[in-house]
Length: 429
Image 1 (tube, rainbow, N blue to C red):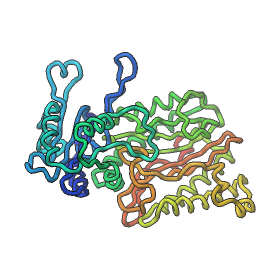
Image 2 (image 1 turned 180 degrees about the horizontal axis):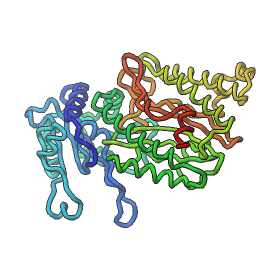
Image 3 (image 1 turned 45 degrees about the horizontal axis):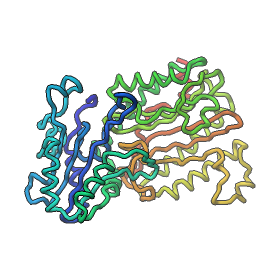
Image 4 (image 1 turned 60 degrees about the vertical axis):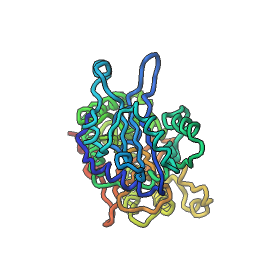
């Protein structure tokens, strides 16, 4: 693996927190993600199931984690099943974890080869009453392929139809929303790599550069800093493309006079960062571009101040919406009288700011967690207001990653240039 070692106490504590939520006589089983095919004999790069990684720290395919805190034998209370390596696999696929390495990495004492799983499962199902199985229950998920989790759910229910089956996802959503110190360390590193990439771009962007060339610069900086790559599809949107919220074609030439909206973030040790910046392609904002930029920045600063313990997403977004209304009125995009008499269910600012301001961040860029949960210390949210004026071909979005603490909040991206004057100064170097 590219990233540095992670303290196994992170995974030991994560498993302890999870099993404490289980009723008696309960077993939980977690599967690795599939190695997904492309065409012919091609495969996509492997990406571990985030719940399995969260509980084990193992980044290897065909891995299974079994947790059964009430098992009769202590060695059966935590078992990690791994694909057994061989000379053939070593030659054709490369190195796989040994049992000792997996034990050191995960803190799980009982490591078995994968071919033992069915025998062990048969024995332990005789002791278990409840079986917790995992699935992707993210509110935005659209799952159109049968996953390894889904196949296992069908198989185990067919073989053991009289057990009580329960959902592991809600428990993981509850736990993963609060980040530990070790997780914050990894997320800081992802943010640090993202900072290096952004500073690299400030000296690279100029009229005539293609959007995909900018994306290539990002990849270069990510990979040279031990990141596997971007945490999500990078948005490199110049000119009117910036008004397409999920623009990922990245195939247009950047023109003199354009504003370039970039939304990207490095992944590090499976943890995501998420940054948005909007910069002038020629190094200098026009008067209008600067007005819109400063309006977005004003809303961002206000929104950041509201990411505090005790607030909630509904009140937060309502307050940010009111702040955005005032900025859009100043920009002559909204009429104050119209705003005063608008339908509260369809606020007028949504024409120019149509997405939410914040989402959970962690192992997933849109991380799991109950959306309406009151803000708590240890949560990490993005803060990303934007103004998109299609008739002017101008879109500006600014985004940093914010850690909520008991004493307020901490901007994990505070070192990344944000003020318009700083952007222009660094681009003139």
